[in-house]
Image (cartoon, rainbow, N blue to C red; front, top):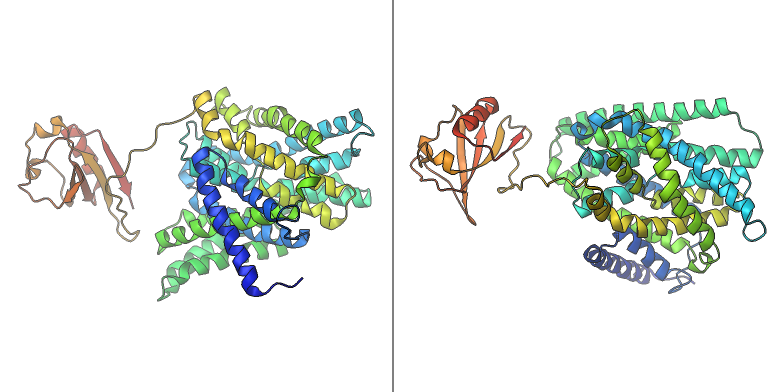
Length: 500
């Protein structure tokens, strides 16, 4: 039955309202927001309020758009200095780790299929590998949103490792999914050709992401648009162009948009703060839309019959397949302790990406594709329930929680064009031993104390301003090395430094 546009907008707005309120409630009770978005989609679907949506092609297209934005924004938020020490480990987890997960899980699925013959659908070995490949990558949307919304600070560079892995492991899972679908349908597969295809996809994807990211930085800084609001729109066009152009050139678009975002986010570009604000909100919108769409696509009553299979595979992946693949992948590296590797194993979250990849067998008409989709959906819910709700607790149990960085008392950022260092210091009794007036602090030339925070009050100091213990000073200098030396001579150890 055709619905008027007003009814469509009304229903869509109500669903978005419920999603936002559910996300707020979920945060309070420790539930991942993305799980609740899935649940709302299922609630409004054919088994709930009756919205009929059963087109996997549309769901796949929406997922493709959403993942392009999520990966691009995730790349922009990833600091290169954070991931530089763990690039090799992240890449190995994103490639060799995904391959290991596929074969370990695929072997277990095939074993289960034979063990429970005639009770459940019997998967052949290629079908077992296909189901495993679809679920083999950790989900960037889930990892980015849960780690950042929880505000968890982790030791051993665990957070950038997890974010780098989840942002770059989709290409491997995608290629394995496509290769196995082709083999199941044709019965023929050349391992050499598959390896070449994988290398071409990764190579073109990485090169395109790097080059287009550099080009985008140049264009943004040179184009000089009068309306500042158009810069985020320009970057949005860059993200979609990068994905589409790379895919049409036989590269992997998901890898390309992540690398392009990484290049742009770590470069000095105009209006960076407003661009980040736009993409933060826009990314959340597309996460909501993507999870709601996937929730509408599934029929909850079809999940109950496959619950035993899904539960067995899901628990095996969480407790065995993921840890084995992580420990083997990181075996040559000594920068992670056993507890650190256990935490990486635990935060192997499944989410929207496996569900989107599960639409490929549906569209291709692979036998048992419906069951593959339902099993993947069930395991995603299981993963978000078990792993997603214990991200913080697991870090505490394993002792990998790090102290949060010192709070920024002034909340001021200098524009990129200003080549100065800004620092915040706390006045201690040792500092006051040299005199309690600002003019009595020995500071290098070209250094200014621009603001004082005393309790909850802020004021601009003068040379004869008397300082008190626990005052916070905001300093700006174009000679940060000399300033740090002055801090050391004054006995100042509690400071933060921001450099442009």
